[in-house]
Amino acid sequence: MKFYIIAGEASGDLHGSNLMKGIYSRQPDAQIRFWGGRMMASVGGELVQDYREGAVMGFTDVIGKAGKLLANLKRCRLDILDWKPDVVILIDYPGFNFRIAEFAHKAGFKVFYYIAPKVWASREGRIRKIRRYVDKLFIVFPFEIPYFTRQKIDFVYKGNPLVDAVDGSKAMNTDRETFLSESGLPDKPYIAMLAGSRKGEISRMMPVLAEIATTLKSIPQYADYQFVVAGAPSRDSSDYEPFPDQVDSMKLVFGRTQEVVRFAEAAIVNSGTASLETVLLGTPQVVCWSTSKVTAFVARRILHVMDRIKFISLGNLCVDRLVFKELVQEDFTSEKVIAELRHILEDSSYRAGMMDGYAEIRSVLGGKGASDAVAQSMIENLGMELE
Image (cartoon, rainbow, N blue to C red; front, side):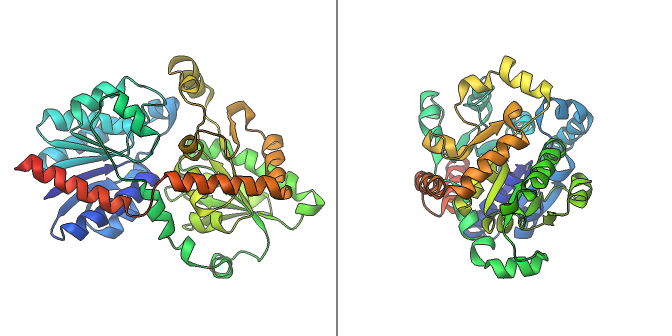
C-alpha cells in the first residue's frame, strides 16, 4: 500500500513518526511519502518537504506567509496526483490539511484524518468539511468522543499516542546527572522554559521569560536557580536572541526538550502539546499563552473561542477542571507567572495536588499502544475500502 502523510508542525512530526512505525511493523513493504520533519524521516519513507519551512500560527502569521502557503498547497496537490497513493493521511494542521482533504477527496483519493482538528474549540463550521471530505476520522482525546458522537461523525478512538511517545522517550530512560553532563548544565535546580515552536510565539514569550528569570534570581532563596530554555526543533538560536545571552542565568538547550522538562523543578509552558507532555513527564507547570492583538480579537469576538471551551490546555480539558493554572493573553505577566511558580515551589500540598491531577489525566488518556492500534485500524479500514 502507498501512504501519503502530511504533518505540519512538531507534534505532528512526533505522532507521524510513531504512526509510520506502526504501519511498517504490519506492512514492511509499505511505501510512505510525507511532509513532516526529522522524526518521521528517521523512521523511513520519502520526505517531500520539511514542515519547518512553512509553520504558521495565528491570523497575522497566515497573512504574512500567504504566498508560501499557496505555493506549498499547489506543490502538494501536484505531488499527490503524480504519486497516486492508496490513502492520504492528514495529521492535525487544519489550515493546510482541510484544503488538501477537499482536493484529495474530489480527485478520488481516500482521506484519513489523524488527530482531529479542534473544531470543538473554534470554527465548528469545519464539521461540514469533515463529513464531506474525510473518509475516516481518528481522534485522540476522550472528551472528543461525546462531541463527535453528537455530530454523527464516524470516528476511531484508540487512546492517545503521546503516552507511548513519552514513556518510550530518552527522557524517561536516562538520569538527571547524565542529562546535565551531556547538556553542559551545572548541577543546580532550574526552571524549564518552553516558549513555543513558532517564531511569533517565541518573540512574544521570551521578553517575559527573561524578566521572570531576572526577578526570581534577585530573590535570595532562588539565587542559585538556573532557567533553561528548551529550543524548539523547528528553530535555531537566532530565534531566541538576545535574551539567553543577556541574562546570565538563562541557558538555551536544543534537541532535549523532554529531558529539560523532566528534570526541572517546575516548567513554564506555552500552551499546546508540550503542556500535555509536561503532565506525562511529571513536572509541575504553569501554562502561558499570548498571541497578537489581532489574532486575540479574532478568536474572542469572531470565532468566540473563549465561549466554547473552559480551558486552553489539553490536560485540563481531559479532566474538565483546572489541574494547573493557565495565564492567557493579558494575564501572562512576569508578576503572575512568578507568583504561580512560587506557589508550586513553596507549597508542598499545592504541588502534591497538581501531581494527583496529573495521575488522573494520565488515567483518562488510556494505556499504551495507541499509535500501533491506529496504524492497524487504518490498514484494516483501507483494506476493506479497497476490496
